[in-house]
Image 1 (tube, one colour):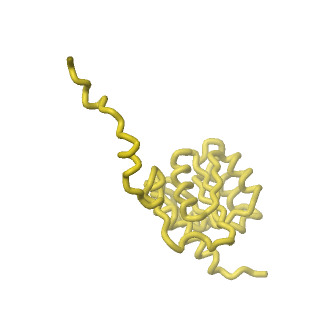
Image 2 (cartoon, one colour; image 1 turned 120 degrees about the horizontal axis):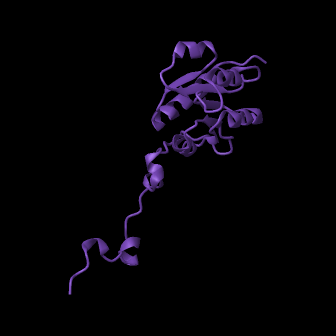
Image 3 (tube, one colour; image 1 turned 90 degrees about the vertical axis):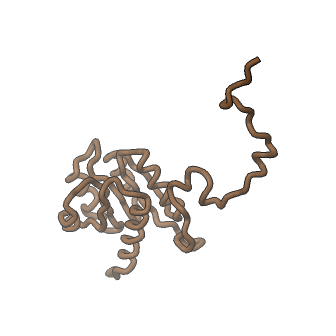
Amino acid sequence: NVPPPSWLSPLPTAQAVFSLPRLPVATRGWASCCATVEPGRAPPVGAPAPRILLCDPDPELASIHAQALRLEGYEVRLAHSGNRLLSQLAAGHLAVVMAEILLPDMNADDALQALRGPGSEGFALIVHSYGCDEEAFEARGVDGFLERPASKEEVLRAVRSVLRKRSAVPTAE
C-alpha cells in the first residue's frame, strides 16, 4: 500500500480556515497589489467623485489603473479605442482624461485634436505614451505626461497633481 503524494494532502478543515486572522480590507485579495487607500484622499461624503476617463488600448493595464483610482474614490470610465474615446468625450462631465494617444483606430494627431479641440477646456488632460516630446504636448494643451508603462503610484500622483492645478487656477466667469 503506497501513501498518496504530498500534493494530494486533504484540504484544511473549516475550523482551520475560519480561525485565520482577518486582515484589513486594503491588504486582502488582489486589490492590495493595485492600490492602498490612504486616509483623507477620498472625496468628502456626499461630494461627487471626480470622473476620470482612462483611454488605453491595453485592457489589462487600464483595468489595474482603474482599480487603483476607484480605491482612491474616483469614478472611472474606460475606453480602449478612438471611437469609444470620442463617445465618452461626447458624454461629458469629466474632470480628467488620461489617454494613450497611439490608438489602433486613431492616430496621435487626430486623438490630440479630439482631446484638445473646441469644447475640451473642461477637463485636465494627461497623455500616457511612449517616449514623446513633453514640450510639444504642453504646447498643444496637455496638462500632464506619463511615460509608458506607468505604475499605479505614478498614475495616482499625476491625477492628483492635475486636479490640484486645475482647482488652483481661477476661472473667468
